[in-house]
Image 1: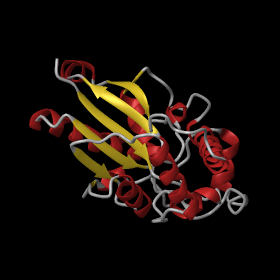
Image 2 (image 1 turned 135 degrees about the horizontal axis):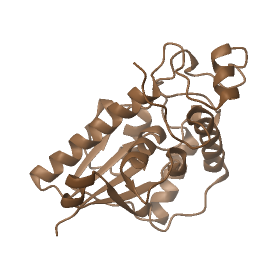
Image 3 (image 1 turned 60 degrees about the horizontal axis):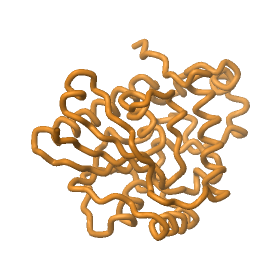
Length: 238
């Protein structure tokens, strides 16, 4: 039976990542360390080619896909943007220590919508709706492979919703420039809307650099606080 593959790749390290800042909707470009790391990963292990290429519209994702695939003109998907952290954008946990809403978020371990920010359920719904549109378009057109370059939260939303084997949201955390390959079988997708996660990206990559480990540790800690100990988003109450 014909199958379809979608390769999910996280953008490279931005300066905000290195500083531990919340940069969901902030249009932060790649840091020099991020560019160097992507070049290293590209040289050490092959990134998968595809028939179609998609990207978040934010600079760090566009720069990443253009660096990895210089000849590609990606389709920009607005709903693949990272979650908007509202008043917390561009700030570190230390800078937010006196914010009572942030303190509640940290102390309770439950999902809290940042002031003037995006509800976690709404974020996940928009990401998953955009992903389903891509899958449906591939199935209709016969396009058998695609690459999506986006953000950690975007990729974790997709993987926690559709990925097999099943895993919690932050269990799908990957280093900047890393990701996963999914295999979609039309019959299984039609019945259960699930996809087999069959490989990591890039193939043959080197061990995590200290910068990448720092970014993963910071993001995993934030995800644990935001989504609770089980890594599951609360349902949107609106």
